[in-house]
Length: 277
Image (cartoon, rainbow, N blue to C red; front, side, top):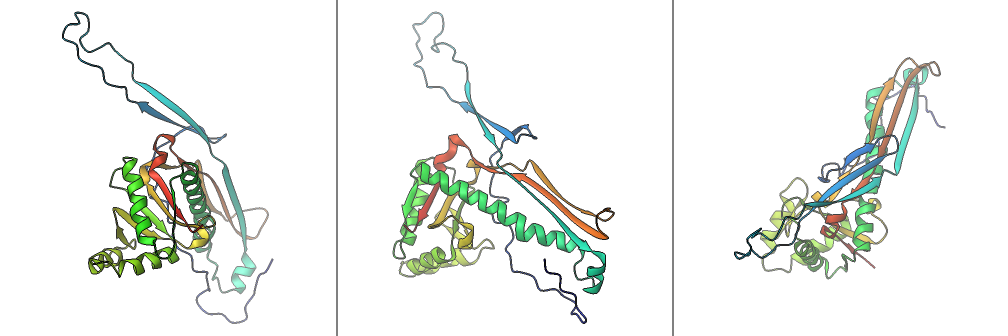
């Protein structure tokens, strides 16, 4: 444990640079919580029925009979249950010029620890699904842009809607894509789309989101998703400050996050990836 007490101090504390959460709004699938304690959720998928031939000669039922609309129930179990309890001793806080404000430190903990943990689970599940369904392509520096179009083609063939498509890319993959585009006859038009949007840009029906490579599984360069195929399941999302603990003179930062990300089975083909090997 390291607590650095200061004899003189500035008005600001040095903090790590950490991005905001990348995936929080990019999971639009829905699950129903069945057992919060056990972390069990389920999804019901209606199953459409094949068409019959209309028969004008049938005196009882020209429509070919009634078929009940069936459904498929898939049950998932939440695997991640994380927590933290952090003390801010009153004397230490005072001797550090009250720089470690409890509210600010709680936000820092959520930003630096909780959000990245959730993002990494999301990306791991997406990458694993793409690998399991063989919805993958190998990317090189020379083929990065072509691979983007191939991933879009995979989602097209899976009948993924054009809206709510996201392409997560590493900074290296993004650089290769832009370099490929500069040799394209419509380079200036395409580059404008990549540069003028707050989320990085648009490309081939995707919103492009640049993500540090440490968030992705090894060798993954791109993850293409239709957001409706992905469901986040935050069973417990707790973060609070306790100022009257019997165990410490000061504040306690307490948090628990029971969560997971699931790829809905009926829509799993709308997930694809590009790897470097």
